[in-house]
Length: 129
Image (cartoon, rainbow, N blue to C red; front, side, top):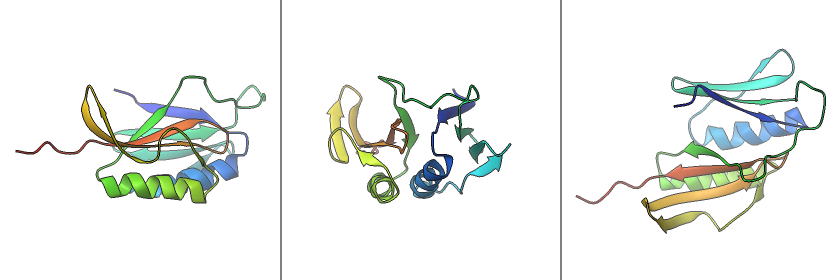
């Protein structure tokens, strides 16, 4: 559905440290610098990027926005959250784990990155046969 997602960062290197750590738990390699002002994390299905705002103003998190990353296992959900906390992120919402909702059970963990952007990792458990 999306070709890429880009988030603003005030401290590009602190944000890179955070995203290198959390995305590594999902098997995604370190960010690659572009134009000395942004880092890209590329996969065959799309790209994620962090950047200093082009207008020179401070980056601000969007109120009500969340960027969600897909995990293949529940263990990745917990590893993502732990890596984020260890690398400058702050926890938000409920502790990592299962949530029941209209879509069934989802395993989720939420963090704020060093700029305050809200990110989530989501794992959809397979349904029993």
